[in-house]
Length: 92
Image (cartoon, rainbow, N blue to C red):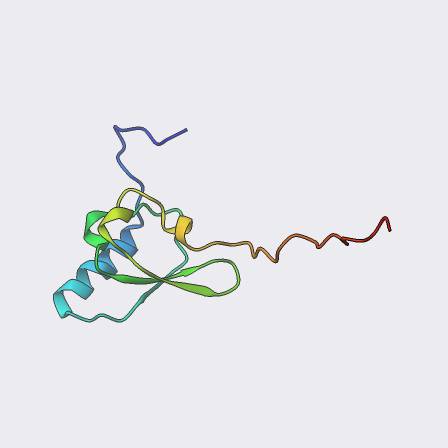
């Protein structure tokens, strides 16, 4: 279920303040965040974030196509190590 259109998209106020401050100073250092549920706003475009996935921080450069998605969608939390191999000649 999506969020009510009356409320608007959810975003972290502190994260938005950091982005606006970074735009004023032209500082391009990545912004470290734990706010995975924050919606990507148009103000976030062309900024770099370090998103926490529960263990480490994943680097993400926000592009225009990402607007409207959540930050956590781009920092996967589970590691896929592959399927188990079947023995080809098990029955022989």
